[in-house]
Length: 539
Image (cartoon, rainbow, N blue to C red; front, side, top):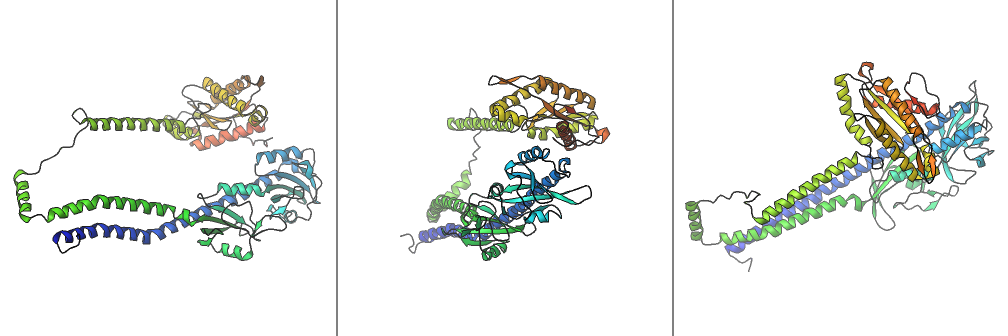
């Protein structure tokens, strides 16, 4: 028997305990200590993520409101409001702001006099709370029902003033709750979690799809709503709370106020996902320790067997070892002298290493190359530009920067299809590669926009280069579907010149971008090289 009163049994029991007790102790310590730490770290990650969401949502609100304030400041909104000038401007505003469903101009009586959608004309919003608040300054409404569409939405409004500062109406833009749903989807954390935004009445802004169960819909807006008690409970979940869904799953929740306390942001995640990393690690740890025991126990039992051998045999063995010494075994180097299996393994390893290196090289090349045009991409510019800037800082030579944008590219996609748009971009890339010098760097900056860095090029030379590119684009013939697509480009030019205190690439890119927008504002199909005068508004 294993545990009889013998030296062998005692040594085997000792070996078993010596192997198993540390394993059990390690697993127990891991469960007791690491489990709570993992849970707290995950909750802290949720809290940090929610803090980011708060800033993201508030920045989004501020940006939308800022856009409306900017819209209200345009000359077309100077009283008296003229219907003929405003609708195209309002439609452009909606088109340039994907989250906005409609844009309006409202006179001082509260009547819509111009709109991006003609069906809204003549509707009165005089009784709306946001119209009254907009008299004092820019405002964001609560969730309301649109009178024309019947959809729940949020209104961003800014006041209009006449020459004497008197209230003359408002400019406003509406955002449907679907936009907030999309915003929440982009802010989702983890695989099982979801995010919600509740207003002060407990109404969910958006269409959440997580574990949270909404008992009813708001009678007026027909959107999910929770009780005030639940809202208060969620408001106290800043550090985290847990509840069980109707299916019995444990869910962790954290919350954070937003929009100066008017909204409550809530994020949730199942406890299963929160602890998944812990259980996976524990399983791997247990598997590793189990495999270690499977290897270690036979060795230990073998050692115990050798220990119980006669002491004389042990002494004889020890004497032989003393007399003959230990034989040194040199590592088997790879190569001709190595066994065939080792050489095969070495060859396989070298082949694998070579393949890995080639794969990494291909991946690195792919990450800095635009697959459509074959030109370097924006990431390549960010990597290589610093080298060029340092080179020109040492040499003192100027370097020009050109920002090139194809005019009305969206119209090309809408009219001829995205395949035609792709062909235009490819031809544009070929044209730039043909015009520019080998030392110039051209990248696809994004969408239909290209950037060029021209070393050792003054501002005058850069302007001449920009004009050649503009003329080349105008002469470029791209035929698709039996039709010739007319092309033009707007170009902004700036210069990296250390003698003129333009020392950073970011500053030069920004100046070129501003020049590009000025070129667009002046009618497109032109190059702008000077930014000394203020640019006209973008048409």
